[in-house]
Length: 154
Ligand code: HEM
Image (cartoon, rainbow, N blue to C red; front, side, top):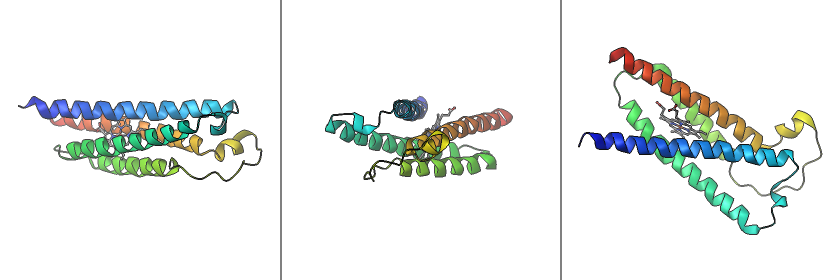
């Protein structure tokens, strides 16, 4: 059946994009809580941290599996522009830097009080959200590049 690979790719894409939206939305929500002075310590339940850890790992697994399959499907297409391959490599490097930043770490006690930018510069969630926004933008550019290449040969 010729449609089944297309249906499979649509499902992969859907999972990938839903994961991206939840990742960015979750990060923005955490930042909004931080801005109101609500850190993880403000959440009383111990199981919350564990649930967040599981969700994070699941999200990273979804990105890596669906991302790898989408990459394989795209690179198998004819006339993939060189710029696409370079941007995709940059996107993947940034995505892994972001996953590394999101790894759970043991707490090193309260950070010294700081205001303005230096407070955000020390906040890992801030950098995760900032990188996620760049990764999002690169993804949209990748889509544009491949669609233009497909139109020019189609
Ligand atoms: C291992 C990591 C990842 C790999 C290998 C990967 C790979 C890909 C590939 C190949 C595409 C298809 C691009 C195209 O249309 O040609 C894609 C789409 C997309 N990716 Fe990723 N990705 C990864 C992680 C992420 C992350 C962490 C985010 C966001 C936080 C993200 C957001 C998106 C979005 C929004 C699209 C859809 C773009 C569109 O159709 O307009 N990806 N990804």
